Length: 115
Image (cartoon, rainbow, N blue to C red):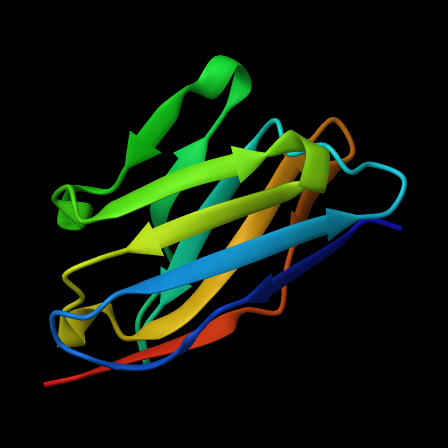
């Protein structure tokens, strides 16, 4: 069974940085198609960034050049470097793996940005 585990969340002041990590394990460890989502309290889950086949990248408009998604095939891991964080970036950040077997989500990691 594929397992996706996020880490790296925490409490940071506005303007600070965090680096989220996501590790994929199990029979389908591919990180070919991965994405980060976030969900703020009482809001819908929204896409933050994705990295696809051949290194295709896509970022939400609100990222505004502050976040960078990357991956390490050898470690079956995906990362989200977040700089210049704002209070509105607060939420639970989820990692998602996509493949022929379907989508697999992690449990999420909490990011809290104080003003």
